Length: 135
Ligand code: NI
Image (cartoon, rainbow, N blue to C red):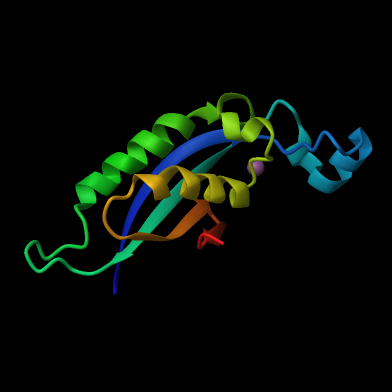
């Protein structure tokens, strides 16, 4: 088994709010992130695919294809977007780094024809990242 990774960067804005919490609870739990006008982040996503090297090509998969999938499924949807308002999944799910990573997994996994999605690593630059391994 070998692991290949493709990285892409995007920028997006979001805020954290749970309609089941009171206004006071939202402020206490989410702090500044609760401001409904949102705030921006630069993100970097790394998509790792696990597979075997095809002896005919020397590759697990065509990494240009992985780049295309990443651009079409993730960047076209999220880059320079207000995640809560413009990405349907985040109308009802709080767009934390964790939930964005899970959503990226859901978008990419069904599009892979070769290999198996192994990990989504999402950086909220500069100083944190989350890993999602599909469960
Ligand atoms: Ni934030």
